[in-house]
Image (cartoon, rainbow, N blue to C red):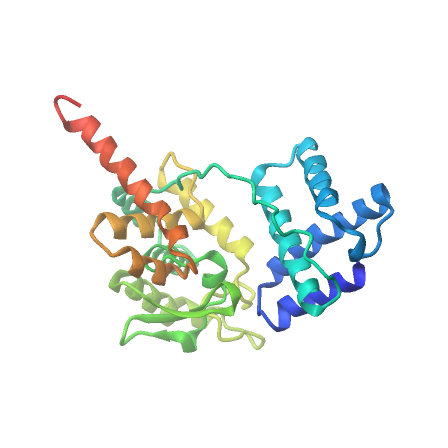
Length: 296
């Protein structure tokens, strides 16, 4: 099975163009399943895998305390792997046919309200070293709803100041155009004209956001920057980069934006992923009603 897993991961990388993180996660799920099959069932060939074997493995993982969302990831990995083997003719039949995905309780994403976003941004001291860069990071995360990886990989040649558009490469190497608000453009212009030239070293690339060493900022470092800004803002909220993405989508929806347009800007493949923000907006409306209506 190990050889088939390697071939499958190559297929995900080359044919499907899926991210390295997705490849690693899928490979880990399949390798753990293979190890269990070898140890518990003496099965080392995909031909020997049946639906009862898979069901027993999933039950074993559930007893070990794995959450429904983690088990769902395993089920998805097994389904696409065995479907791949069946299409290649290695298996006569896909053993995962009829295997249902576990039901997962959907949690509403946290958001900041508009005043909290304003407070977060306005408390950034742009007079300290790298203050302009850090303000531009937060402005762009909120203005364009970027994933942290998309912000880390943003490049100068993909930023059009005249049209106020940024071309980003999202999940699955899919390219999309996102608008950049005028305040974010102003923050970017200040950083690019004043601070970035001082950060550029011989090995620097065309990445928009650079570290003190002149290298591209990592997602981990961007996370740290946002957390530091949050601590200095005085907000009693757990602020992190993806919270700004959630806030971006929720504020667009509450101000009348079409859900399909929000889906496009966020780079969601499925509208159902974007629809969670309608529930957030409904919760907000209910909260306002309870607070202000005399007979609520």
